[in-house]
Image (cartoon, rainbow, N blue to C red):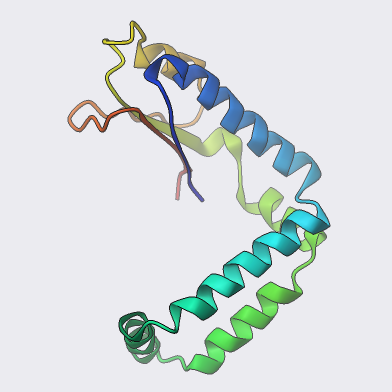
Length: 147
């Protein structure tokens, strides 16, 4: 799982806090039935539309050959996704996502804004922390769990 946000470097602390609060809420209450329905519909529609592109379909067929699967595997997977309940998703989130194992990567011109990326690092959870100093895309932030 990854979360990405683009913001003014001066707001990086607020973005970090907002992402953590949303994750805590998701783990506490889980998605609503309506949120999950919309998410599943969107995901499944993207999968269906992606197969209308010849290059994407060829890549998917190649992947199924390399993994020893067939398109039936894909069909079965999509059926399982469509059948997921909010309770099942919440249980999986609680089992596999641990905010204490999350790390935050920030990049940007913090000095220009009078901000300091190290201040954000100090406010982060106990998880591993990485900051990018070699590549500095303008105004970017990303939060991802360890694998």
